[in-house]
Amino acid sequence: MIDVIMAIDQGTTGSTVLLFDKDLNVVARASNEFLQKFPQPGWVSHDPEDIWTSVEKSIAEVLATAVDIDIKGIGITNQRETTVLWDRKTGEALHDAVVWQCRRTDYICRDLKEQGYEKLFIDKTGLVLDPYFSGTKIKWLLDNVEGARAKADVGDVAFGTIDSYLVWRLTGGKVHVTDVSNASRTLLMDLGTLEWDDELLSVLGVPRSVLPEIRSCSEVYGETVGCDALSDGIPVAGMAGDQQAALFGQMCLESGGVKCTFGTGAFLLMNVGPEPVRSSNGLLATVAWKIGEKVVYALEGSAFIAGAAVQWLRDGLRVIKSASEIEELALKVEDSGGLVFVPALAGLGAPHWRADARGLLAGIDRGATLEHIARAVLEGIALQNCDLLNAMQSDLGKELVSVRVDGGAAANDLLMQLQADLLDIDIVRPKLLESTALGAGLLAGLAVGMWDDLAALKDAVEVERVFSPKMSSSERDMLLENWRVAVEKA
Image: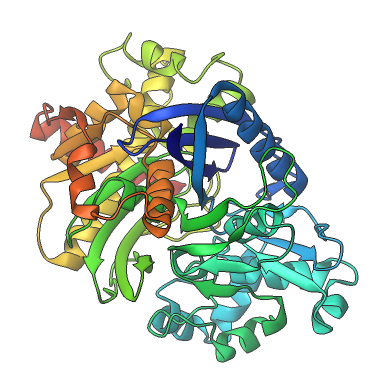
């Protein structure tokens, strides 16, 4: 019998379930995508039942391939700001989930800024007033879904980001909790006290009764009950938002450790230690994790579109059949032929915070080919991270020497080389790119005693390849200048 930890990685486009043994080997893995909804321009929704079905299906597929195992605990990591309201009595969602990418609450953010509330939210939460975060999504749902606010006022409605929703489903509706990393993304939690803040709740019109209890990232929250794919009594024992989980899974345990996850978006996080660092360059102060009474904070820069730009080429324009084709196409040309792609398909995140920005392909002439566009898309994904890293270095007052990478798009060698070239620093890629799931698994394993020496785990995260800069400074400067001009037009 092999002792394993189950990690549920519930992402923006699909759900992945992995089993890790004590030596961090992946015993089994399964993934299932679900439907993306775009009801209006700039709006993004998910059916919570689709999400749950994709999780259940992935669990069932994993367990069908893994034999002679004993699941010691379950860790959850999730798309963070995506917001669900459900009926506490029936468990049914009141509306589709409002996804983190969704810009429907832009007008709410503008109104709050005009009323002078932005400094209050920045000071208390470390976040900016942007549709990205959960607080304005909750307000929109309560204000726009028929009967939602009346139900909430009498305590019949539960709010959760996806971590909270999955724990509710896994425990048969017995446990309504979230962890500090996800709570820190709601615009509702005070970054210093790690508690829900009454003043912020009042400004957004969110009743305290809908909120989950805030817990640490590594503890037993409850046990499985009534899940078709799982036996009862398995501890649900670890939770962290996807980017914080990746930072943990990359073993960035010391202050100054940096990682960039290339998923649907691109997310650069740095461990800044036991006190939050306030950014003067548009980055976010956020909770990295809490284990026991020890809290670790992070600086974060978020680009809303990374791998989603490749999906757009595949599913929207239908110029490629699979995401992996983009590298082969882009390698057929030496450069992008003067094309610049700004991946503002869902607005621009840090450090620009322009919800109104839209995607842009600039520099098109008659010589432009699909191959040039493919390369420009990869360059655009990498170039937006330059803005994030420059902002981070400015806040810290020192230059970084390397960034650890993970996520599906990190498997693209050309993208990683472009990232090293444009950042002018080493890019370090581990053998296991699913650092997000690994982080969730480690947090759960620590809570149930699978591992007791965190320091020993650092050596288990093996490096697969280091990409070092090769681009000339003149070429780099030209690309960065063209990027700056294009961003202003987006």
